[in-house]
Length: 457
Ligand code: UD1
Ligand code: CA
Image (cartoon, rainbow, N blue to C red; front, side, top):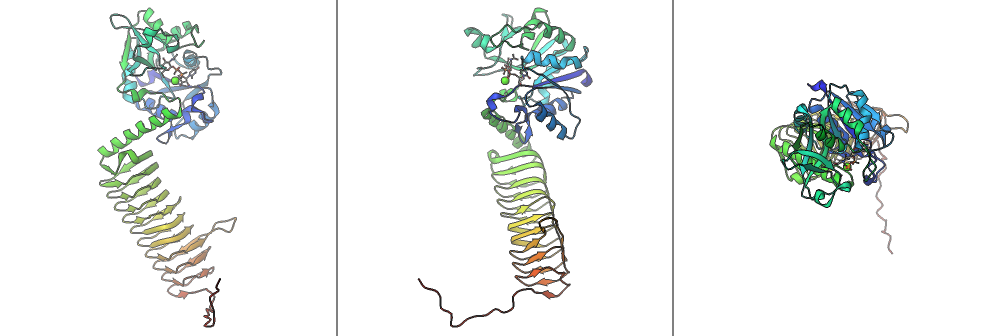
């Protein structure tokens, strides 16, 4: 069944109303281009073949397709946007007569796989279209029915009479039909209408004339089939997408301080009793273990956080691994390659990059630790900096277990601090510091001048 179904996704339009250099279908919803959502729905519905009709921004769209981990779908270029029927025709040469065709729009991102499935099933004996009833049908093609309630055609708003415009059942644009017949109907579509375009919707009238049974499937909600034409509609689609995420995650047992102030732009997996405060953004692939707490206004991108860890307010974690029982933040920054063991404390204004921190170690205030390997139970004082970069190359700082790095020290890499070493505050350490010794490097002649007078105005 699935190999018999071919999806044709229309994505050639300019999207003028987006007022953007980015092709419309690449605008993200929930962190993924709209086209990605459509492709995922096609995939989830078990549709084996997809054909993309591209036009404006085709190069950018193809470049994005190449970044996905899966084989890009077949795509064709529609040189001139002569209408939706013309667009579908561009892909038809690749579709065998025996196929069942489903037409989707690249700018209708929230379509559910189950709806596609229902549309496919309904097309088995002829022709199926997806309709929806709107309180405000402006801009959409209206569904025409005969007195017996059978669908007879679709009239575009610009071509509709005042009576037809009063119809509230509208065309979502999604249709399904056997390829052989669709090919024939497409060849009969003309452009004698207000827009001088080849309308796919004319196929419905042609099917009705052929006496083919037309089944109208009703979309579960208007949200699912709402097209995105401008930034307002994009933001609305974003909210719908976020509400779906939130409801699913809450059912999985996520405790959100406020579901309206939470954004997921990727995938989040959670353990039990995970709590997330307001204003957090989760991007990429994130997992939060049992009892993890995330404070307000944190950004977590591609991170794994083990059980019992607390991420405090305003922290940014990017490509990091955080062990169990840690405390990170407030105002901490974990940059790519940060790996924390268990019971690690990373406090305010501490930045880590490509740095491993062993169990029970602490860097509680104002530090930069880059390209470092830090052992267990190390204390990194306030203001400690690893000088890991000479302007051209990066070097490693290695700190042994139980070392103590006094405040405001600079560790000039490559350098190794031995186990149990004690670095005196304010030291610039450019040579290896031996185990279990105090190493100090600072100007020695501290003086106090008893006769000194404070300057006065
Ligand atoms: C279309 C339908 C209308 C329906 C509405 C739902 C037609 C004639 N009308 O109108 O009945 O209510 O969608 O949103 O089909 N595209 C191409 N190539 C083209 C023209 C369009 O790829 O030559 C793509 C666009 O990028 C877009 C989709 O097809 O993704 C729909 O085109 P659009 O011009 O937005 O159609 P509407 O006027 O909204
Ligand atoms: Ca549209």
